[in-house]
Length: 176
Image 1 (cartoon, helix red, strand yellow):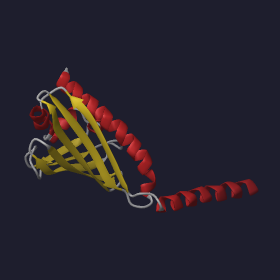
Image 2 (tube, helix red, strand yellow; image 1 turned 120 degrees about the horizontal axis):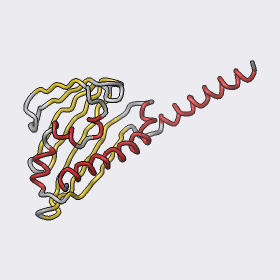
Image 3 (cartoon, one colour; image 1 turned 90 degrees about the vertical axis):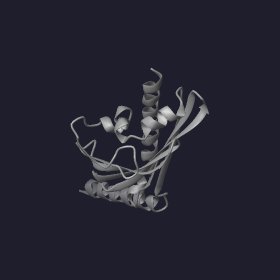
């Protein structure tokens, strides 16, 4: 019986310690990854601004091939909304194009409703390195409220790997 009490108290102590740590942790996650692609900026930008094209290189879009999708508006324009309902890996959510700076930047708000209610921003920027080379930057940022902010270090590490994979796949689309 004493062992069970000790295990229970240790478990409560660990949870309490984690909650105290979360009080002092940042609440915003931010990841920026970049790659150079051997293709002209306008060609890459015109591809990136369409959310449906993101299906071709976005790792997260391939987590459930049977997900149900809906669209509202005109893809590639501000106000376009792409929503999905998928399995537990894909979750439920929507992406909305909230801003486009022609030839330069696409700002997308991502709203998840399952597995939890979370908002984030994804920004894709294109900058000419030369006439035939483009630097593509992907930024993912958002806030996680206490105590979910405890997961930010793990989330930033995972987002970094995933964005690198997405950028590598995008590069292959343009260079192969």
